[in-house]
Image (cartoon, rainbow, N blue to C red; front, side):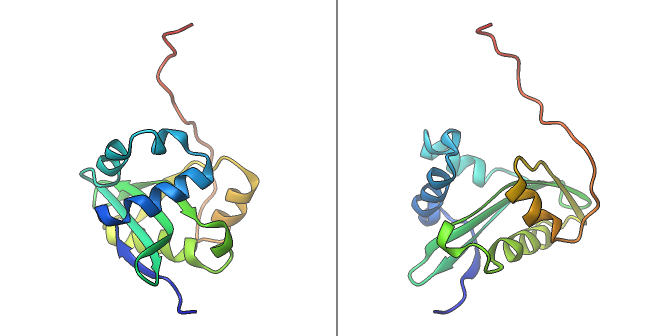
Length: 137
């Protein structure tokens, strides 16, 4: 099989991207497809997909940045049966390059993600993910 091709995300990729998000259990991305498409194409956002065959999506990355210096890796997802083949790494590196930024920060939420990101050139730090207050008590 040919290696996946990295492309800029476009609306025809949305069903495949939503499939990956469902596979990850990311419910906020799958509950409103139009909202997700707007998020993936928002100003300052670089979203790339890895595709095989007839544009079947096997990976996605989103980076948000200022286009000059600082970016944030918002999400990376690779289909389960395509993991450990360098697809996620290529997506992150290409998205950072395409964003025009020189560095990116990210929040990692589990040991598998930590292991993946630790194999990229990096400096480790600490951080916080801030959520709006819960109005329901």
